[in-house]
Structures are given as C-alpha cells and as structure tokens.
Length: 266
View 1 (cartoon, rainbow, N blue to C red):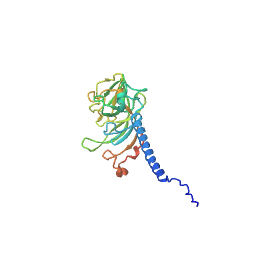
View 2: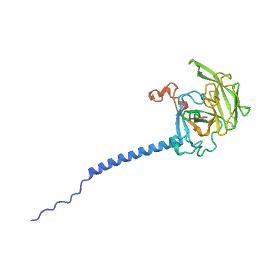
View 3: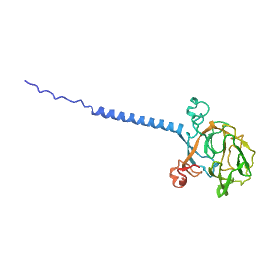
View 4: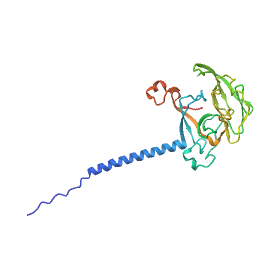
C-alpha cells in the first residue's frame, strides 16, 4: 500500500522578511539623521554660522531683527571662531589668508571677555591711525570722503520718530557704506584723540556713529586682536520687525521685511 508523499513545503519567511525590512528602514533613517547632524555641525562649526542682530549699532546697514549668515572660513579659524575644538587648536589662526579688509562687516569676540559676540565694521587695519574730528572720520591723517545721502528715520530716546542725517562714506580702498549721525556731528565720539592700531589688531566701528559701543571706547571694546574674529558677515537671510518674534510665523505676512531677505551685506 503506497502512501502518498507529502509535497515539499517552502518555509514561510514573508513575516520575517517584512520585519527585517522594517528594522532596516529604521536603521537607515537613524543613519541619515546622524549623518545630517554631523554635516550640520561641521558646516556651523567650520563654514557658516547664523547670528541675529540685537542692537541698532550698524543702522542703516543692519537692523534690529536681521538674521545674518557669517562665513567662518573668510579669515581662517581660531580657538574663538571654533570653540567646539578650541582645545585642539594652537594660538593664532589657521589659514588666515589676507585677514579682515577695510570695510568688512565682521563678528568678533569682545576682547575684554573673549566670549561676547559683537558685530561691527572694520575701519582700521594694523598700524593705521584713526581719529574722529567733528563727526568726520580720518584714516592716517586723511579725511574719509563723505557725501550727503538724505535722511534716515529712527526713534529718539523717547521713542518718537526722528529724521537724522545719512551719508555715504568711501573708505581708502573704495568700499562705500552708509552711516547715520543721530546727534549730527557733535556726538560724544565725534571728536576723539588719534588711535594707533597695534600690530595684529583691528579698529571696529558701527555705522550708527552716535549709538555704537566700538573701538572708540578703549575700556569697553578697544582694539580687536585677529584671533578674536569669528567671521565675515555675508548675507541677510531673514528679517523681521524689531518688535516681532521670528517664531510667530502666523504674523510673517506683516512682520517679515521681504525686501531684506537674501540681500548681501555691504
């Protein structure tokens, strides 16, 4: 009596395959996230870093509520520009190149504490002689060219609208930029002694000449060592009204300054 043979059965692995595929998908997603975070960390640490503008010291070039992207590679790297790996960096800068140029808008660490971020314009290079006389900027004994460019609307100390003089300055290397004089040419720092910038240091000033803590105040800011530079301001990538929250996206239609988005910093 013959017995019918049982057909060969193929093991059912469909469930296991599905489970393995699902586990593999989660693993790949985790890898992608980790890689993305590493790339973002490298970019922020070594290449670009965003900063927001909290004060009006660079009006009219930069406004309160502007968000700017700063390129760290422009001046090379130091322990202040990449603090994450500061313990592995020697003193000085790596690949500093030509260094900051006259007219650059730059972020630097405040020399008196080496931690607070400031953003100002480079007005004096190592060895330069800088002086303000009756509101006019002198570099190495020569008055910087300045031409009237109308007026600019600001708030006075009582919060009232006020039109103040606006000018275009042309620095010795040809860089043109706007400045305002809230107190005309008779502000507190519109008449100074002559400053001689030490070697390895730079002289920084705000474009809002009568409302800027900068190198003219030697006790508060003073000369800025090359090591303290974080990077060069390149572009305004976002901007909201100075009394608005950037996180209140439902208010963006009337708080975002559309004309300033992705504009180059000059």
